[in-house]
Length: 203
Image 1 (cartoon, rainbow, N blue to C red):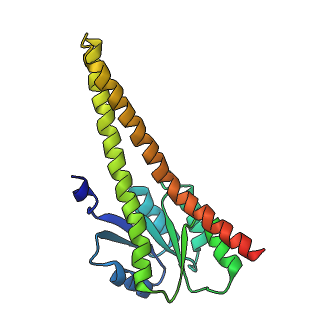
Image 2 (image 1 turned 180 degrees about the vertical axis):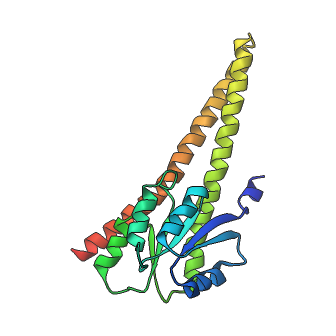
């Protein structure tokens, strides 16, 4: 069951105002275990995030109307998107302040064009695997809580033999909760760590 869940397709959001850039990203990531969704503006990306859950967002920096920095901040402020990983894709390579601004606005990684397709695949795969693992932990937590409720009902009806088993299931549920918290903490931790690196480098 778990091995099948680890192979399930996850959604990846591609955001760029130029269709040719979206075509490049799609060509690199197509054929893998991803459902690729395209957005040609920041507002369109935010609309997609309102109705779908994404393992990672590949976000262009230089876009008209709403640039990538502003879009990233709004994504971070959107309900259920607080921990959605954002990878900036930009042609600007020599501006340290520019890159730092990307991390400071909520990105967990930064890719400079032209980039190595293998590197992009590897970065996306990391966050896709984290997303799948999170889903598995959530499912396990729900099952453990459901079993806890069932055992508590049986115990309330005088079945004291269920007490030991109930304590064990409570421990399992607590373990799943801690692992889920750790999984959710990884994404913001990556962003903070990378931001600190650029801060120390710039000073």
